[in-house]
Image (cartoon, rainbow, N blue to C red; front, side, top):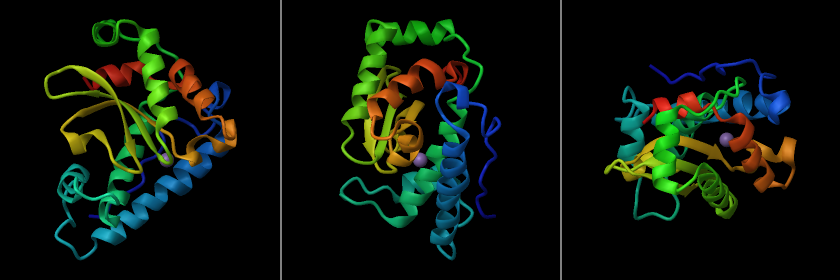
Length: 199
Ligand code: MN3
């Protein structure tokens, strides 16, 4: 069965007051995310990957020795990344659950320091990619950045929070100001309940 574009978990304009406009959602979810679904399905059609899960395809097609990844990986990994991304944000502005707050302070000294590290990772990713809060196999939390469609699964890590720093994610609302987009993401857009549920 072919992969499908999941609906946004909220209305297109649900995050508009918090800095992610309905127009961004129309481009980013309805067009960009959908293109990864269409191209991913096309890329696996007739291959041994047809019928496998997104995670199996990501782990099976990621080439750690390659500078540029292949078309199957790029599209399927971006499909998965965006499936997570929409869920990691929300309109409610919930407080950070205490077990997550405790873990972040244990690993980064303070919430503020975690935000500084996460923003620096996203701002410092040269070109397209993602900033992540991950849980490593030893249970520790780390901030990482990846290029293009690469994600924490490729390194045996759990993705707790990811921020898309491709220009399509912020250019409509923040133009060239990626650091301002990252600050707003952390301060206003993250659904911390969702992040905590991934631990
Ligand atoms: Mn994107």
